[in-house]
Length: 276
Ligand SMILES: [Zn+2]
Ligand SMILES: [Zn+2]
Image (cartoon, rainbow, N blue to C red; front, side, top):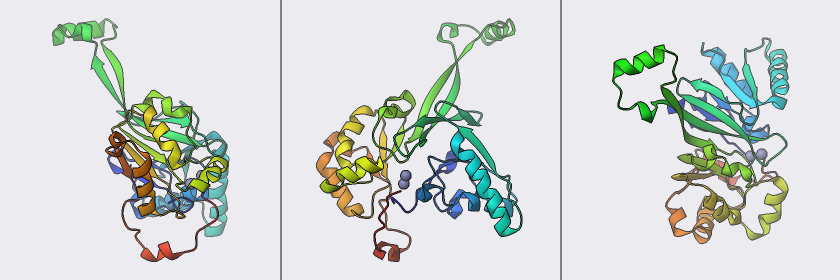
């Protein structure tokens, strides 16, 4: 929900995008990709590290833009003064195309998006080694001999699995092959009302009117919509999506928050003025 909390967890890949308010499900995840510093995306950072420490887990690893790294380290020091001890934290600074391996067969590739300053998106890419096709007829022994002689017998195949674009206005990042061709792309669509177009433009967010153009650039099997403003609400947002999307796109678009909030009373709170 825009301005409140963004955290997306992929337990099968041991990675999460943003920390939100560090829900329980996040604590066991070893890698967290932080898109930008807005509070709705970053509030739980210190709690994430602290809970891992409390549970006897290794510190965990947050990937964030280089510019944010000193501030996150300062945050942990300040919390150390509040708590009486400093919790260990591992923060890796990244920028566009500075890949980080998170498993033997998985890497995270950051990319620049169009939001506050140094905001990033992240693609999770599966990497496979495949036998070069021209060697397919050879026996295992022949291939082993080639390998021993120093010849490259395999090539590297990248399969983009998930791309998370964080908070962003539409931009050229949609055309990166690891975003465009990802099986699942998670994008924000904050605004849905006609008179919210200026608001989307000023805050560098996506408006529902942008979506047909965004979807035309993506080959993804699934496009997940997140970060909807509470000003509009899910039911109304879905109604507007149905109005603007092409029938073929309706099949592949999923609204992430398509379930009742955990705490119903939250929906009765007054609307905040900032969408994060
Ligand atoms: Zn933001
Ligand atoms: Zn946000």
